[in-house]
Length: 318
Image (cartoon, rainbow, N blue to C red; front, side):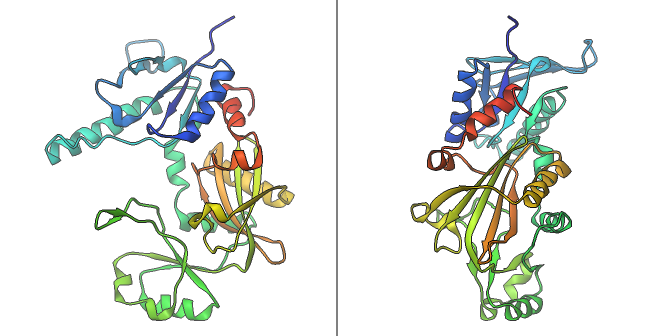
């Protein structure tokens, strides 16, 4: 029997979700080469050759324990990689070195022919802009809450005053600290009185609150759809996972079709969608995370999410 082709798993060191998928790949006897770009150097090397061999790119990626032939990689699970920052170098040298790793290692991987990407980072990045998400969702027939993106305080105050309840949401999650303490941006209700001229510094996203009965987290892996209804009394359910209850549900056919079409539009093979369910039971679009978290849902629902990811990476399903 021919040896199975390897799967690259590119992620940070502590990634329980990746561990779950790797365990399933091991069960399928699929070789795995796991690495984090931040380890570039003695613990991670790449050699790629162009123009000197019959294939467009030849070479390898090597860790202390594994080696993958670039021409032989079956799939790439691009999970949560961290790029190196080179804190021991002078700032300009560190910036230079970091760019060389991103465009050298990243470019060599992007040049590979044939592997399945879950998901290709360039396609995932293109799908990660919330304004474009809102427009595409509406074009695909999904209900989109009234939303304003602006840095004009007058427009923001008018929008907030027009709707019964409005929340502010970040346009992009970014690591952020205050006085050395990490903070995050929850979806919180905002009032006109809270809006001042500091809004002009950057665009802000304001959205009318859906009178929701529950939330939906929908994970799509290939063409497999896993929909989980998340019930709580929280405006933003991420604030307290202990307050949540979970139910596996089936999506209306038109909603499932729209979400699959959404991924197809961006050339993605997986994504985590968030929707709100109103009091009538109708779903409303909130956002897509091309590489969202789902690992915590599996033990609560017994859905075979990690096994499905492994089967997709191994080529057993599409």
